Each structure stands twice: as structure tokens, then as C-alpha cells.
Image (cartoon, rainbow, N blue to C red; front, side, top):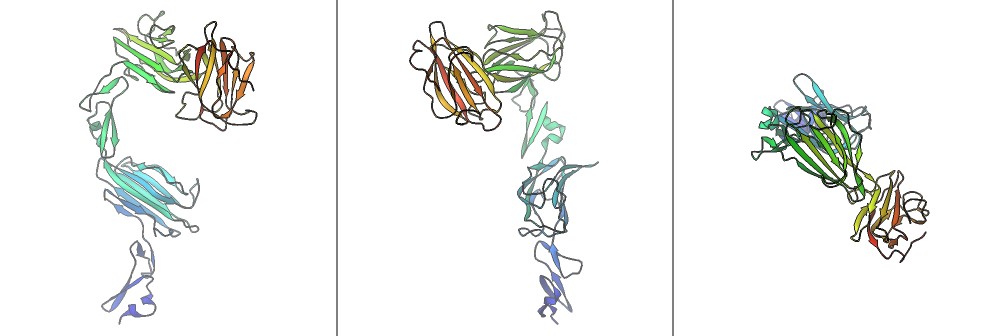
Length: 439
């Protein structure tokens, strides 16, 4: 008798297969028989040893069923790491993830480390295991169902896990390879693994960054001379803030010391000579350039210093016959101007000359009275001088001339809308009476 030919399909929910003297129910790919041997439910979980592949929620691409608990254990060879990259992710829930969720853990010999518990519709970032074993658990409650997830897994050998990849200092694992990296004060040898002492002349630019004495955080070497030439955006003063400071002590800093200069080289005015273990206060240059020189003698060595270079807006600018640039903020061109800016520049020309301002770009938050973000220009050294105007909005401004030898520019922003800012050129001119803009 062929039980599968009966109207009820042998009682099978999906497929019925006739056998000698009996029959059996089977399920479509991705489904498995329940305990009654007739019904089918979405299959899930398993032990995976392939180097790469795809895992999907039960029932994919349909909505996942309720009351499901699936565990996938992905195991790679020793010295391998496993990465997960989610292509689709849509589960019930919010930040709390107490209904439906995906939980990812690295299974280590002694314990397991949680990478995260995820729900909602925001795709998790790429997850990489700490070892060669990764556990992915999916759980759904008895109510809402969603589309589910589709995640790709791939395994990559971690060359850094054995003998530090042969690197003398640091080993950085990358997909399919690795790279060696050297500590501060050293550079990579041509063999790609060893580190050699780097040249100690540094050129730094940009809105901010870190700097430190050679061999930091270990003790600096003896008989060393290092320089840092720091340049910032025109119109913004270089600022150096020390996080750590420990240089051989001497009352006059005659032995090991750090010198700081207000300009592009050691011929510029000196801002200070520092040694000992007391952190210097933040040091601000008068312009967009600062020069530092570190010197160590043949005897005592200490940890040295670590510092951050950044910028402060405003300051005194000298107008000359050749045009110079002024920018609203240090990251002009890369980012919009910051909120809560409060900058004042005083531009001074030689006696008998005036200042001319020529705007190349002008884009500041627009408001009828320029009450939010604005630029004010005064015909003199400070805000007690006659105001030539308050400006906001976008579009080119006409040239602005001082009646005397100076102009003061004030730039203020609130904490909401940020725009591109401004780029102006200023020059020293004999024709300061040509035009005044008033508002």
C-alpha cells in the first residue's frame, strides 16, 4: 500500500516517501522533522569546521519562527581567527535585546568572552574571534517574528599568534597576511620584521596629533638630539599639552632638556627650556608654527615625555605686501567649523599702511540678524573700534579695508548648525580709504 497516495499525504506536512511496507515523512532543505515525525520546523544550529561560508536564521529568507533557540559553533584550525560579517540583520527588539537576539562569543580554553548581544535592525560591525572558536546563538520568543539575519563567516590565519609573527616590536594581523610595526622612535628595517632607530627629525602638521620622546614609553637613549617642526592651519596657533613628563633634573636644565621655540626653527624666540618631573603647563605659540628640540647627554636617562599638539584660534597677525591666508577653523576643508567657537584675530599692518581683506570662501549659518553664528569686523585693534559689519550666510563678500593700520575679526558660533566657514586673504595696502563695508 502506498500511504503517500492518500489524500492526507500520509499525514506528512511537507513530503512523503513510500518505503517497503511503510513510509516516512521528509522535509525541504533548511527544515527538519519535529518529534511527531510528521511536522517540519526550520532547522538551525550546528558544528561548522569549514573555513568560510554563510549562516542564516531559521526559515530564511522567510520570517524566522517563534520559540526558536539555535547555536552554531564555528571552529577553525589552531592559530586561526574567525570573522563574522552581517549582510542582513532584522530582529525584534531594541537596545535591551530581551525578546529576540543574536549573541556572539569567543569560546576559549578557560572561559568565553562576549562580543555582543544584538537585536533590532542595525547591522553589527564586523566581529573577529579572540581564538579559533566562535559561538553564535539565536533566540526568538513566542511573539513577533522578523526577517532574521544572513551572516558570512571566514577564517584567517593569525600569523601574530606564534612568535609574534617574527616581528621585533608589534605584529598587526591583516586578512591573508600580517605586518610588523615599530614603537615610536624606531622605523621598520628593509627585512620587514626588525626595527632600527629612526631619524629624529619630525615634521608634524594637521589640527592635532601625538608626539613623544624617542623610545617612549621606555627610557630615552643617551646622546640623542630630536626635533619637531609643527605647522598648523594659517590663523591658528600651535598648542602643546603634556600628558607625561620626566627628564633628568637640573636647576638650569643644563643636561637633558626640551626646548620650545615660537616659530619655525631654533632661531625663533624661545618659549621655554624644560626638565625634571613637573609637567609644564600647556604652551601656545603666537603663530601657526612651533619648533621643539630634545637633547640628552651621555649619562642619566629617564622616561621622557608624551604630548599632544593641537591648535587655538585667534591671535595677532602681521599683514604684509604679499597676501597671507586666514581660515575660520583648523580643519577647514576637511570638516565644518566647530560649535561654541570664540575666536578673535587682530591683523596689523606697518605704519602708514592699511589692511585689506579679500574673502575667497564665505559660508556661515544664515539668520536675519546673524544672531547664531557670525563674523564681526572692527576698524581697529579691538571691539571698541567702529564696527564695519556683522556677517553670516553664504556668498562672496566685497573687499574690506581698514581706515588705520589694523582690523579685528571676531568669529563666534553656537552649538547647533555648522557650515563650511571662511577663507580670507589679508594684505598690507596703501589704498585703505577705497571702501568700507557697513551693516
